[in-house]
Image (cartoon, rainbow over the protein chains, first blue to last red):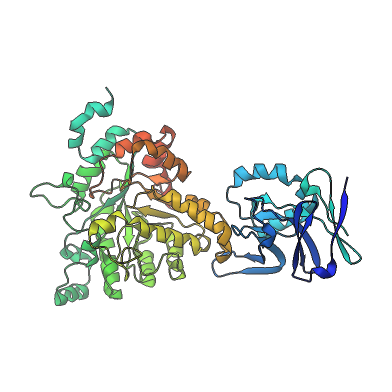
Length: 165
Length: 376
């Protein structure tokens, strides 16, 4: 059964800020970007680093040398250990080192995240041509109820846990 | 008794091409043979009176970069097995090339370069004139006479604009399949200075052949001058590493998506570790070079090929691992590097290559990469 936990006041996380909270033993990072809140498990699916301590960066792409596409509306979290970028919105990693091998791995563990963010993910991939990486950081939907951020830990796979307020 | 054991000591008396023919009875393309110019006078028929007089006025004998890259009498320049008392140097005539390598090898094709050290000439117009003379000499005295032979265009490598003009001048000749780019340069090949040259090479459907040689302003090591040639030659891969890293990092393969690059005369066993490292760092630092959207290992496997010689082989039984690490069976191109003297262990290497990869290695990869059955 879903458990609802009040984790912070909205005022605790100003625009551009973040807060790492502990919810029943789960370290979870909550980010406030462009008026929206995002929650990711504070654990990089690559080697377990505290992902949510990483730099928040915006999408930087290029079609050819010297031509840049910089899109601040797309926000990524760069893991503090290896710099791999995970999109805050979906938890999807980009920059795929070993396409074939990891995609199989991806499918089985990312099913929950796909439920949460499948549409965004699919559209984003075709739009910008980024290759999905092998890993998906666990993300939690957040709801704002009045002035509180509430996170929901659901039963079943971690990726299905939600955050509400 | 095995074939190689039966050959025994006698095999050592054979010139390398014959030994290779013994070890492989399928089609062969030799992806790197050298045409040797020994005197400037050989180029006079292809030079204007102005430049002939220019040389006479200054007693210009040859580009100084030639003996730097290839000290004349060293075995790595002219293998003793090819020397004949009282005969011209190996590689100096089509007859010798046929007799010493094409025929004993039974090669269907050979890709030739002429390392005349043109890159060391700083006079931009003289460098262009000498490059043109070498190319016209190659066409008239080699390519037009020997249908098995394909050539590499010599360019005034310090001057991309002049180099592009030379490609425009001779690039459509069906005998040319490659542009010879000396590995030592003042600026690495990924630099945007070079992108138009690579675009020109691709436009003419030629291969960019990055090959041992060149005379940059800097030393042939990243950390100062070696004292002896052996240091320079044995550790040459550090320059090739720098060039490959530069090509990948600076986005040449995005700027010129259909570019084909051959690395020649450097060996290849060092490649997997560089590929792994590039891949690893790119994953975390890709924002430095956002144009690199394809993983570096995939880029290299798609755009780059290596000739086999000199073979930097250790214990032969380790070869299958290296091939697995390279991760593509369409990547290596057999080469004798005639008349340079190298190991006599190619047959030992070949014995370790999975049988399914041998035809690619010995001929098919080069045939397809160099479009030996016709360019576009």
